[in-house]
Every structure is written in structure tokens, then in C-alpha cells.
Length: 118
Image (cartoon, rainbow, N blue to C red; front, side, top):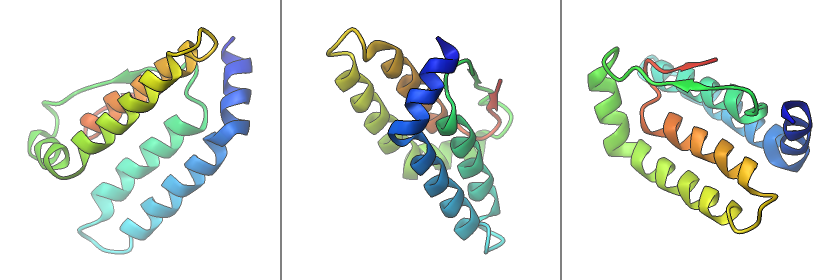
């Protein structure tokens, strides 16, 4: 299921979303202040490319100030958007595995600093 899910995800938007995250990460990395944000964008690019079979481990205590600033300015909107997409995918039984992947992205969107993708 992991392989098939990743192929379907990749074809129907995972590749394009990953490229967009990489471009955003590169643009943010042009400035010294944006480098930490750019590295988080690369995390999103990795997860959005092939999310099936990966797990997000949160470690909020590692960078608490960065995570608080992220949640205030960017994180809560992204997490809400990803949860909205996940709820949309739960309408059909076929979409439930994809909804679980969107929920992983929402978890990463809330606290990306210090989190690991395994």
C-alpha cells in the first residue's frame, strides 16, 4: 500500500508541491534571516514528495522560540488548511489514507523546528 499510495500521491500533485516547497526554500535561503525558514521548507518538500510510510516526530522543546514564532505567523494557518484538506478527503473511503497523510503535514506545519521525518 505504501508504494502504490506514494505513486498516486506523486502523480496527483506531490511532485509539483515538492518543487514549490523547494523553490520557496531556495528563495528564503537567499537571506541570512531566511535560512532557518528555508530549511523547514526543505522538510516539507521531503514529506510532501512521498508521505506514505513516513512518520513525523515532534520535538517542540528543541527550538521553543522558533516554534512559537512559526505558530503565530505561519503555522496555525497552514495546519488549519491541511486539516481542511484532510477532512475533505475523508468524505470517501478511498480518500481516508490520503487524509491521514494530510494530517501528517498538518502536524509538521504546526511545529516544524526540531521535528524529524522518519
